[in-house]
Image (cartoon, rainbow, N blue to C red):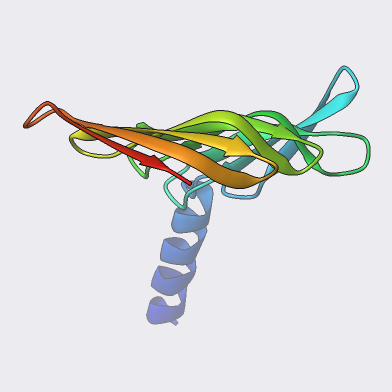
Length: 119
């Protein structure tokens, strides 16, 4: 009986302190703002959907510690324009045309190297 009480107490207390990890959706004008979470409660991704349920507008992604790792735009579910991707010591700018990579420029903080790629 004592073990059951201890197990129930542990289960109840971990449930009490669990972070919210279910996605949240809220109306913002004509759009729906979606926010997705990591298990630790930090935001994983955040962006907007149009009335048809397609990604539309600014979209951001974060790592498990809350640092921004990607940012860009969607139009009716299609990646458009400039997207930015951050990693430890690099920044990549990716230009999309018709949902395809048109060109990529990457800057490396370590060596000040710039790498260009055109499709």
